[in-house]
Length: 200
Image 1 (cartoon, one colour):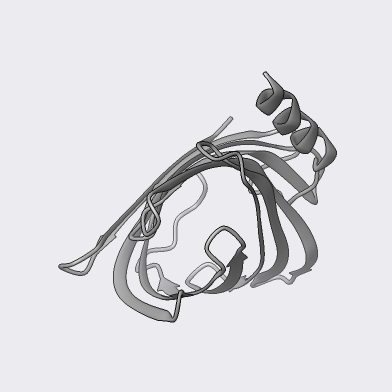
Image 2 (cartoon, rainbow, N blue to C red):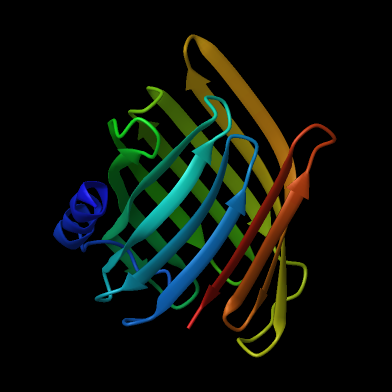
């Protein structure tokens, strides 16, 4: 019970973050990547603030955590042919088994038009003192409207540093968007990646 009260207090105190969907929209997101498996539930409270709860397992340390999941839209550029964004990311939570506290901070920057997309994200996690850099370069062979099915071909590079280890992963990923559903999957013969998201 004590753990639930602490987590509820953390969640209610951190209702800030970035809009992955329209104001008032809710998100369910499942991710399985080489370093982490997670599920996220969240809501966009304003056009700049998104917050939710994140349950995840760190595959390297085989530890499970529950935390807030907060994103703040710091800056957005809208032009007739492109959009660019900078987001601040934060989480605070607990190790489910040991109840040891943890936090996670990061920055996410992206630029996209209807044909190309570039993304860079840098994250720090206190539970294993890791730094993760992710870069994505993507393009879509066919431009579609919102009602159509959009397919993006992505080159994804990840550098994950912790405990004097430095893991680098290069992976092709396919993203499929259809209205309020997103599916991403990829693999490189050694590792795989899967992401499923819906908003409503």
